[in-house]
Image 1 (cartoon, protein in one colour):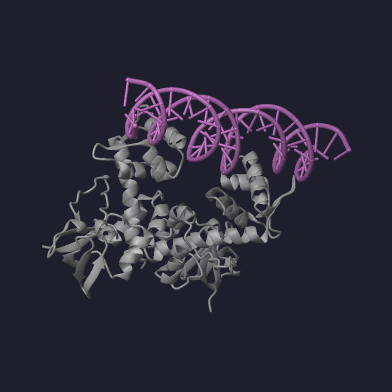
Image 2: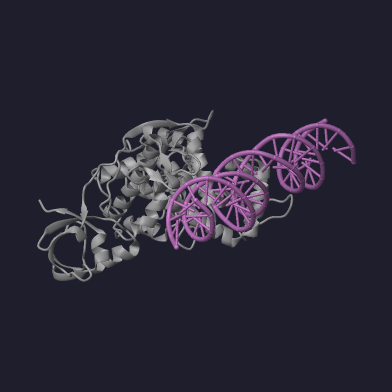
Length: 219
Length: 219
DNA sequence: CAATTTTGTTAGAAGATTCTAACAAATTAC
DNA sequence: GTAATTTGTTAGAATCTTCTAACAAAATTG
């Protein structure tokens, strides 16, 4: 069984993997906020446990067992976030830190019960998919609001970033998942967008913000 | 801030303390399932942190800070147990293992929210008092059923032991906290008692069981 | 009270996770 | 295509929590 530390490395590896499934030591060190020698030694440990493939001076790759292990930790994290919001009344900007700790609890029935109480949710409060009990992650194809054209109407479905500051910014503008957004105009100079949505007939969003909003076509 | 390991030692020390507040190294070693040298070194660490008083070859004593720290961990444990039973539908025999892990979560608002959702409960599912936010424990004066005389009518208020096996035994006899018990007779040979309660006009309980049931006079 | 048993201590080591310093390989930039 | 930079590795050490072996103090027992 993975230690808490190992679980955290697996989670980061899962999230950092590129299309080829590769992660560089330096990226992982930055993500985990530890030195490269620390990552080097942990990578050797994870390899011994069969969770990744490592060759000197090459990027590392999770094995299928490693991916599953990681996805199951992410499942616990996202179920917890959803539980905190839906059943305990927390705001979506408050739940990450708590879930970061609860994801390491070893108790299948605890997470089973959360899942049941919520009716088996498929996404967390930030729109990220919740892996299933087998560690399979459902692929979703959203695009960023910044890719939209003037006049388009879309649904806000998820976020590419869930930092507290960004979530608080969204709160301040009443931007919640599920709302319908219409692109009124796009400023050619800085790519900022004027959008309209429920209760907000005209709101300007910077390119930085539009890049972080994942949407899908209405319908 | 106490590590998880330190929190576990503090909890054990709190629970093992005799009237004088003293705990022997060997008791603590047994309770924690570690060797005496391990306890010896941890005790020195806890002393450095100001949580206990230690003198060579003497039993140890928690300081008031140590007692408070311990009581706050116990508060988190008991609030969690109550939450699992009242809000998540677990049985009282299932919650200890889970609470044993969740008690180490660092998030005042998480436990605050549990407390609020339950309307500030004062006891856990096994009748043990929940320390308040300042770490103060409300003293309660129950006595064991085995001290009762024939004919007495009492309320089942708490347990002196909450092992899964004992809780499952109580489940099998429909013995729940709050029920009213009348002592019908006491067998002089082995101190077993015949009692009557809601739906059970005549149930025989061994001395071992009666010693583990804490009751108070009806009224 | 002397002998035995129990309890507690020290010393030394091991595994997990982390670090810094020094070096080596790979990549990028003229 | 060298030189400089970035990336990755090794070696050696520190901290935390644990252990066993050996010894010392305290308590118990005849």
